[in-house]
Length: 96
Image 1 (cartoon, rainbow, N blue to C red):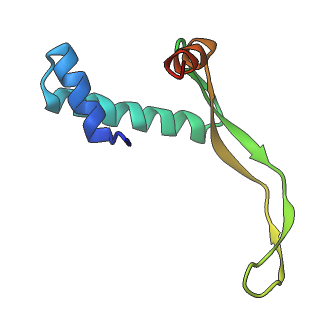
Image 2 (cartoon, rainbow, N blue to C red):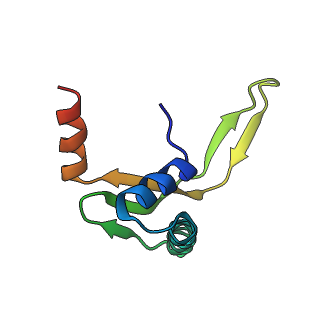
Image 3 (cartoon, helix red, strand yellow):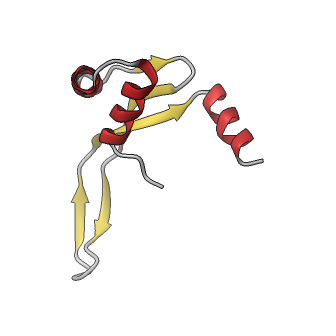
């Protein structure tokens, strides 16, 4: 089952007793900060969760799926997430 941002806000609000509006404001700020840091090509390490960073994708040639035409795809940076060892172990234990 997919959890949305709204679901996560509700879960945090219920768990902490903080009103939903305040949790929502914190969530929005977190998203803005993560976006800004990644735009600057820096990384964010949240112990127990993982590392958010950007990865460079080199320029390459690709084919347009409909026309078969060769297209130059420029180099770009994409967001990436590397889960922590603790998170990996937690997910692994849930699967047993």
